[in-house]
Image (cartoon, rainbow over all chains, first blue to last red; front, side, top):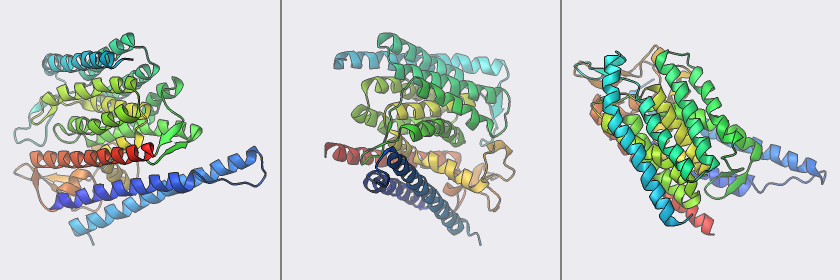
Length: 79
Length: 333
């Protein structure tokens, strides 16, 4: 029964990886900023895309940390 | 390259890697015992002395195969993956001979990533299942992170008899499948010595272990797994297939909050009972690990824990195969 809980954790991690990948491809990758109409726009777009991607990964990691905390609290009866 | 040449080359290099590890390991076990290079297996009632490290023979089997592959069909990816593997082995071997501080392995493994970048064995596109993302500069930084993470992930999961090798074998199945579908035949051939070398080594590493891989063995397997994933454009598939081990590293790092050697952690994640079963530590200071999660509700024997870890590895490999199917669907679109 305990292992089923860990299977669930692995499954949720997998779903989260897929959701993040989908978001990066469908939302972040097509982003295009057009301000100066020269190469500067390309750099700004890349920087914003990188910030988005890193932000999403950090959010994913912190969510996983919270999940781990709740799981341990639940199973080990931590206060 | 014709299919018949690929099949013959695959058969030759796989056999060489498997047979070298399989037949030289017993001799190496006797050699290590004679030299007194043994450690105690604390999870057994008799506390047997087990020789380590097996890394040199693993490397020998893989390196001979890769060199023959390179002579048969010269490809820069083969050379890059081999160099990465050798550097990771050296880093691990230094740690086998002398206990280094916690930062040493991750920092030194960054050097192992350099051959992939310098020899150009990578793509500029990151494969994100639903499409590719063109990130030429960011991808270089990713490579410098992937190799240390992959090496240390396999190193961290090497806590019970046979686990590190078993996980590499199970996780390699979806990785090789992904490379066969989305990668190229050269990278697929380069990955085979790792897979078959690990299968041969499992004969000696499985419970009860006759030899431990040591840091040299686990780091070379982990770094090679990461290098193959990069060269084969299957990074996310490799991560998904390795999720139980990734989860173990993540749990440990997020609870300890710094890079530290496992042996230097003051509070142990699990406690050994009088009947040689493992039970989760109730201490709040104890780091979280996969094994601690598995034994959270009650004590389990080492064999039971290993079986559960392998079940998790099979489950995550099935998820990786499902991901390959999803990617195949989107590529066809």
